[in-house]
Length: 185
Picture 1 (tube, rainbow, N blue to C red):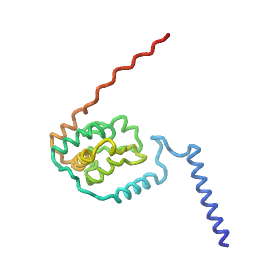
Picture 2 (cartoon, rainbow, N blue to C red):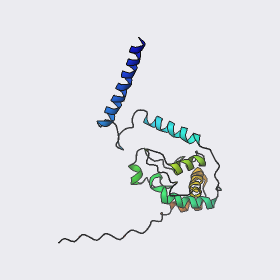
Picture 3 (cartoon, rainbow, N blue to C red):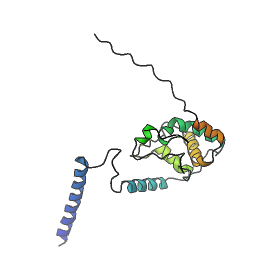
């Protein structure tokens, strides 16, 4: 009796594993941006993210929540974050419209003002897998990440000078010269 039970469990596990393999390898899984999410996809992803973030220490921001930090954070935000997360009073970019899951618009609605700065710092530093959110620990230092995090945590109460800095067009690097057209022989 016990042997039959164990064999039944093994067959069940093999069938579920084989069914999942078949589902993903035959093109049935939704992988396009316009496809609806898979069953439990959002719940599992958010649960894993929240559990992982909860494991790390929740430290206070080492930068002050003042206009100088906000202005520094605004410059960093415009250069690295605005293309996906948007700017105050501006429409979503074409890049953001084409992403799945949709990146949150951080200056519309509550954005992340209801999140503590340490949580935004963690997300910006480490990134979030399978969302398009990159980790910036290799390209921005901790002070820069904290400046952006403090700005976003206080986005609902930033001074007019910071709002003006966010509204101005981001500085863009000069375009490379056009490539020469190939010559025909």
